Length: 531
Image 1 (cartoon, rainbow, N blue to C red):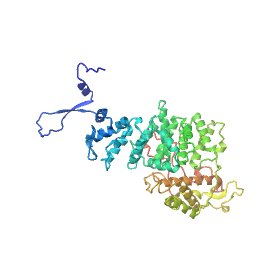
Image 2: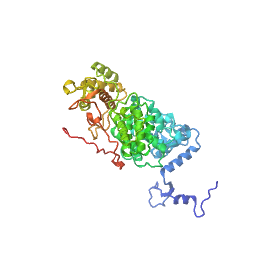
Image 3: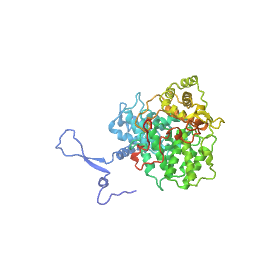
Image 4: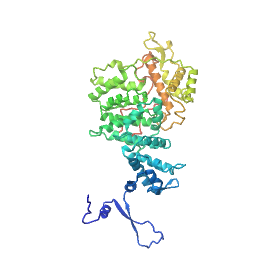
């Protein structure tokens, strides 16, 4: 094909005129003579464009990439186990093009040597950056293994996982992520996924911040439905985190998606069916309730109430989470109020108490010691006998009496029944938390991030604390289903989370219109002592 230059200029002049090339004076001369005639050099205006063109030309005649890097046309970029810093732009291009052309990672193609290539941190950063730009066909099992090894040293690299998760037809997108995580147990999932999500940044410009803003501000009739689905999957998986800020970001973002896509709630409930993590289910139903309150059209209320009923109440075992149950029940009640409840839904089955087995508070210290020995550390036991007990366990479980609901001997006054023994409850919760799979081998001790956050809890809680909360929630559900409340003037059955104190940690009905205000949760009211 003939590409003749225009009549009034050469191709060089045309490229220069359009900014693709530029002519600069040579920065210095060898003899230092400032009066010498100026020597001009031609540069590419865009450095990355130049780097990729150079890489493409250099690789054009290469058959064996390892030979090319060892002694061939690419050997000039390194010397004595070190990649020359002046060629880092070219190396970045090679990290993208080498896997695309040779199905081999650039880091693996470098000549073998006793020590790591230097600067290894910069080389690994360029590898991670290449994942954002390379062809989706240039991802292999080796790519995954190499990324996992980098992730051990650089937690910020995890942003790439979130970015690629929402790319259609990508081997690392949310569909693949979902398949992998659904096959794992609670503890294995928290080991391979949650600990990384916990460290995700929510600052402006981070992957999570971009995802949040897109979900909140960029939804419309023509938004790509596949991308919306992928975003909803990765947001729901973020609910496994014990980072409260990440969970709140993900919840508000999912509310926005559910408002835009009414079918997603049912789709997500079906996709996550059988998942063993109540942290996920609680916030999924919270987001659905938030969508109903923000857009209470009859079709939504009818559909969401039916989905909540089928996945929460019309089951053999109602999930053991007070807030999950409450969010689902309130969606049914919204549909009842709007006179649009599906006839297949039985509102009576949605009202507490539910039919969970009563708790057997018979855990001895010897049984707990055995669990501690198996886990290799007493972190959970110490919390359940210390601060977690005094702040959370004792104040909540003592709202319940030993008197059973419908036992035939309901207490008519408080002199006939004592409250639940909090020490027995503490041992039960500690053992149950250990039984969920926590061990010091999987989750080495690390400090929570004691940053300011409503409720006095740290922003990032340890996985051990997540299991403590899950165990406490399970016990409270079993008590609520089987024991009377210690209330005046007469004991009665549990009805709502406010019966045992303020349990909510987010209001999913409030969406910020300014994504930059996403760190604020001023809806929370912390009452002063004695109020």
